[in-house]
Image (cartoon, rainbow, N blue to C red; front, side):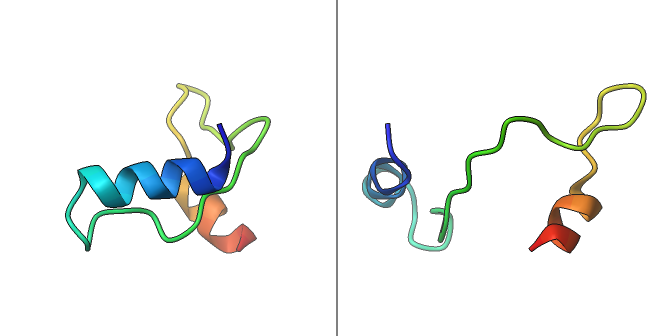
Length: 46
């Protein structure tokens, strides 16, 4: 499944304001010691 496939599927199934504008595949996500995703670090990486 490619990024374009995910975006196309989302456009068909979700409201216009909810579908993702871009998709990025990562091997791992930054997380805290308890396993919660550190969204702040994801936003800074962009």
